[in-house]
Length: 538
Image 1: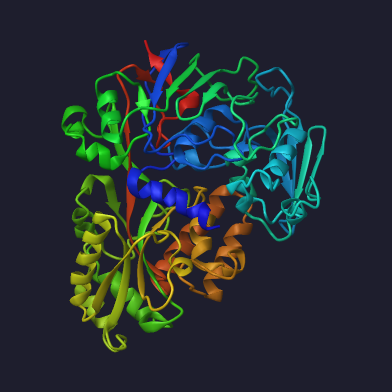
Image 2: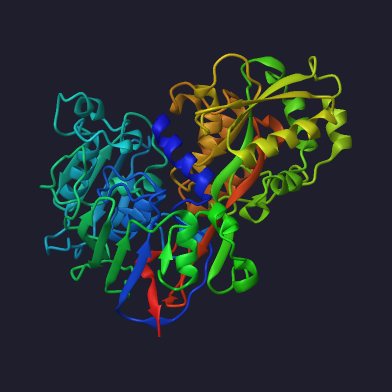
């Protein structure tokens, strides 16, 4: 499970960017043409095989080549993060939330003309579970009935996955309220039932999305062209993409897009700030060619609620939240434009976000001191932080801010620590840990569950916090059938957790940088450019 969070979290630190949806703009354009894409070797495309892909760069391409049971609409967030049927014509779920039945649309075809049937999705699941592949997607399928038998090599297929014609039935060992959100992941892409399991990954093969990979040269380039048999509702406008995987270092990539030599590339927010190009002055922000918008990665201080001064001490945790000047902490990182101060567990781009303002972003020292009084328990705490310089700068400012409520913070710099799982990665005495929190699914259940539901995460939450009241409220939200009711319920749970439990002190959301050439039209940012509907300008 560590691999699930570590890979993406480390990318988020350096890139300041995630994959999938965010607000953007659109421009009318022509049909046809080839979009030029470049990726820096610092953030490479590792695989175009959906069973092994596990980076934002991989997923930006697979979003255009995959067809999934459910996917996200080609729209701005938060609408762009609401799962909707893609290959599934309809779905139903048992009362116990364990058995899901999907009935597929007719008309979907792979790029070789073969029809997409339920067997394509059954094979995708069993291929991820195949021990030969060693897929990171196992995390999202381990609770399928019979998955352990496939993983152990005792069976080739999971008993809980049954495909008959255009009907797929998937049964889980426990209630699985997040299955429709899970189904949007590339691991669930339809693949030809004959596609072999491979530890190295398969390069070019027929796919059922708007586009298909025609050629893949590891570390060099990818050729992607329109799937002429595509039968879905997305609106591809290009003939395809030529992808250069040797796009130079992140700063060089930014400069090449600015010069118009490349149409788009996966952005590193830090590289934008250090490129020597004043892009905000040249283009404006969020206007024509350059965007910097809140993404999906949340910066936070996690409290260790299993020991020390924060155990059974919500008053002190609330006091810390009140003492923090989040706007000053954003400025202290040195890249103020690269993040947005917030006190919410859910980013603005995720359905269910409501800006409740539980804690003032500039702090409230009077209230903080009043809450801390009588709850300091000696007033000493250890804060663990990664070696990344902006994090160290913020940690030192946290130390100064909390001294104002008589908390004596010792900042300890750790090398090689997993940034998203302090409870698992830290041993011995720790009280606070600087965390980047990025679930791989932009769904409120996944942001909040890891904070509360220990039974879903090997008996351990992000901060070891446990509360029956909040867990029950989250479970009720999980079971609501309508998206609007569900998201309103998650918004209430989010506020309850921040106000009453305070297992973390959220600091900010990392912003996502996007720069495109003047040739690019039909711009939908999710927050990376939505390639499936991009076009070239008239």
